[in-house]
Length: 366
Image (cartoon, rainbow, N blue to C red; front, side, top):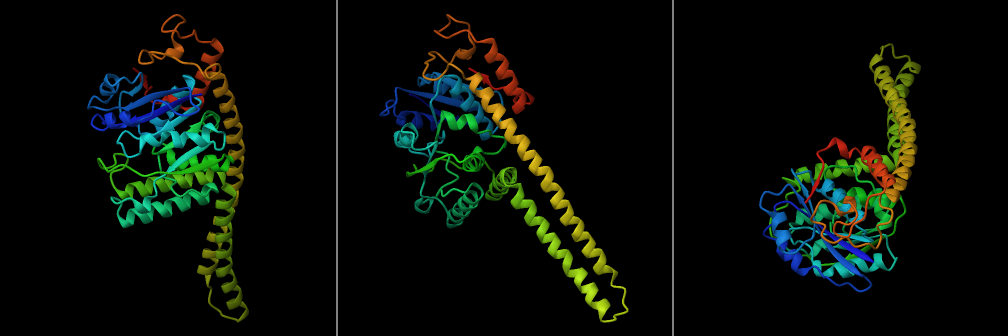
């Protein structure tokens, strides 16, 4: 079994050595532990520090693309290099890397598809009371959307099985954390929670500029994912609210008419008609959303098959010297890598086109 520990970094030259020093190189039940650094457009020499410290696997973005894209590119790289389990931690040394073995254990044992580190946010000293409340509320909202029971849904300290990553498709540009939980929950994956502690705070978050921005973007990601998987709940609720609201002015107009009130009361008819149109539109959108849900399910199944073809033959393999151009695509004989199958190339092209990756600036692999 091969475990890839991926570390998304944005200007983490100062803290990255601390993270690398505490990552275990041997884990019970694991044959190989590989470390992957995703340099998301750093300007402080993060990639050079990683290479100097012996990291062989480095993905570099020529400009900052965000945490979600870094996660996607890291997962793609890890799967193409034979990862059976992918662990995600942060380059700011927030998470206790020495607990990676505990995080991997339920996934390696087949007891869970995903394991998430529970930071026990109520006990974190540098979290303000407001932030603790928001973390709890946010986790409850995600649990409602995903039908899960996780104490810390926002934690980025996670382990994913290869099979789960084949089924997950990150589409948001902000953060993958909430979206992958909602997807996993609605796809009936098993998610385990592993209690952990956190290291002392080293810097402010670079993922968002303010708490308000974080709440807004997280809410957008949660709502988008929820509508994708539960359109009936959203649009039926809206339709009923508008429908019941339309009855009020209509009933008022009817009662006044029966009482012989000579007033026109046209405003009641206008309001009722407007609300009735809103109800009809909600049910029309429900039909469209349901068709899109069916279409998305078919596309996700197709993407899963394409991933199986794209990553075929990679489980359990070792690719030395991956700091050179991607060893999975190098000709046979260079660094012990293999020649790429034309079918795999074709599948990868189709996968990239389907996910829209080619619309963005490609990530370079150093």
